[in-house]
Image (cartoon, rainbow, N blue to C red; front, side):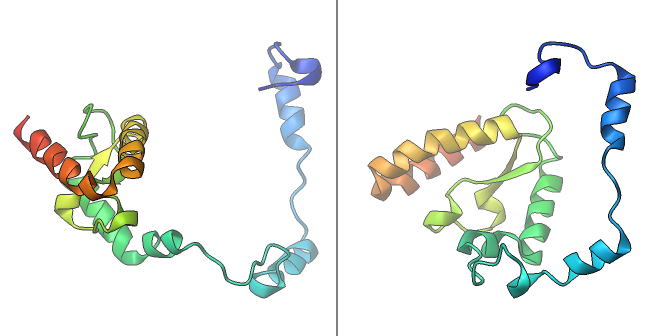
Length: 144
């Protein structure tokens, strides 16, 4: 969303080009300074506190499994049939669901958000029954 002078107006191409041109490439000297600020030397360092879910998801094994699932499903959303790139856990990983082919499906971003929104209240209210509900939903999907 634009603010200020251009709010609600179409920006002419020549102005867009000028605005893009304001970014100067980094000098080699500056690049060298930045290279030394990684890990513990970075001002963003938090003591190696990568969230646990990040460590579990961004592994070579997860990339391989998710690629296989997308290929199995033909890169199509298993709910609406649109283009699907997101791999969804029927039983969420955070409560013990596994990265197995029978627990994973390909969804588009919209359907994935809807699925997650539907699952969250059920998880909060009745965690004990959650796996039974997911199992029923999974069998209904295979039949339908």
